[in-house]
Length: 196
Image (tube, rainbow, N blue to C red; front, side):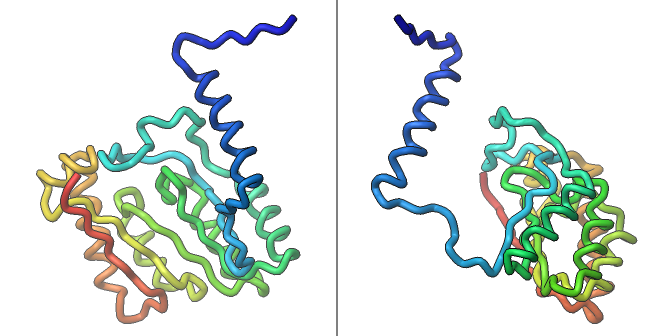
């Protein structure tokens, strides 16, 4: 005789429902995986330094970790073997620059002959301006989106849950991007969010 028991916090019930949904979607012919094999997505960091009101980051229960360099290299090599040449490094609910080995990973992508390009989204509040300026020297970086949360300090704090120091870093890094914009080969997009 088997008895199902559910924890009082509802996690077991929620997980059961997720498993059912995962099984039902294919049976109904629903596919949520991109069929195009031209771009491979790798989440190198699941950690974030902000607590944006519109993001699920503060509610997630998965570990906040960064991918070590060797597994990243191994993943890229396998993806290239499968025919992928473009890479997306944007975390689902994290910040790409929380990965302390990100620049080393970007250098690996730059030097691999079968990697055509890569791109990512960032809140640009973590790197130092000199690191931001180094991005202009990367020739395979094709697209970068910078999320700017609010047009001033007060709205940045209200929307992103950031601090005055992080806002100052964002401004300094936007100025660094402006300094190197003429020699950069990547496409730059500024994603401005002005409300919750």
